[in-house]
Length: 398
View 1 (cartoon, rainbow, N blue to C red):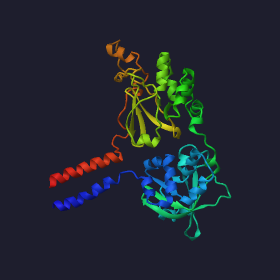
View 2 (cartoon, helix red, strand yellow):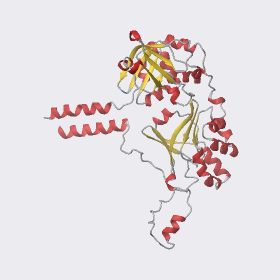
View 3 (tube, rainbow, N blue to C red):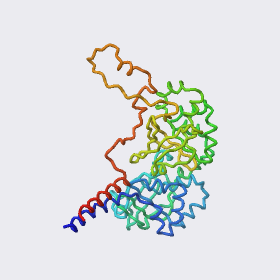
View 4 (cartoon, rainbow, N blue to C red):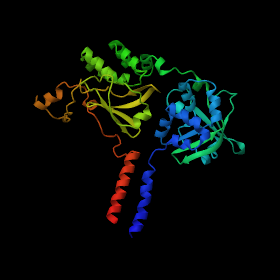
């Protein structure tokens, strides 16, 4: 009887272990002829982005094809755009590639998903051709560029990740366009052009732009409140002292480079550009599924977009202004809603409800450590819970 129960529970344990994320570096390491492609996925930080995605196809090219690509002497940042074309945001195993409906389909790549590509750039046509061949061609590729073809399947984990090999590299004029190094970029101009104009203007007006710029070379991550977010916050910002305004702006910068993949794979406290001596000015990074949340003692913000993610600089758009405990008090509990029929005079409760607080909307100031989808478990949590239940049941049985 005990053996039967063990056999019945064993698949549950095995199922829980499958929640671990795939690792593209380990997959490609088994194939020496793909070592150069593997190497550049790592140094461009594409490997981390691939590993965090749940449904993905990687179209790898061998060392000879990579050498042809490297011979063009693209910058590392341009090379990242080109290699991003080789990562499709859908699952295409060998069987699916040879059974494409109507013989052709178009899929988006990481180049398109990152927002670096304009228009239809970043999309790739996949064609099931005669004779069993499958072709791959970026939508905006040059007409004289030969079509890459399917060579073989490297590894498939349906419907999680498919790693295939294609005959040669994919590219397009948009992907090959020169990309400036992050150290050459004008930070405030970058933010102004991508939805963070108000924040960039505050940085410049306050004279904090030099601190941000000088920090780029050593590694910098900026969490940039959107224009809509800052608009409602400005009355409170104007009430801060000059030193308080500077500290608040610097609080949105971390003196380390953190790619989105790095933020998703780690939680914990982070010091900021405002951290000095006894002034902690820190916050916590907390993952919630695929979302990355930035938690202060006062407010929880969520990353809503990426302006740039190129080592040593990452700039992310967030949906709330980060409020440090050093400058803002914890918001009081929101008062209970009043009945529309209630006719009361002035009371102590009314005074509390009307009393000015650090925010117009308390819900924006109370840190929310709960998930929007509280019943969803991440892979590591599911594995831990599944294993604990399994061991507990075994102890009861035996």
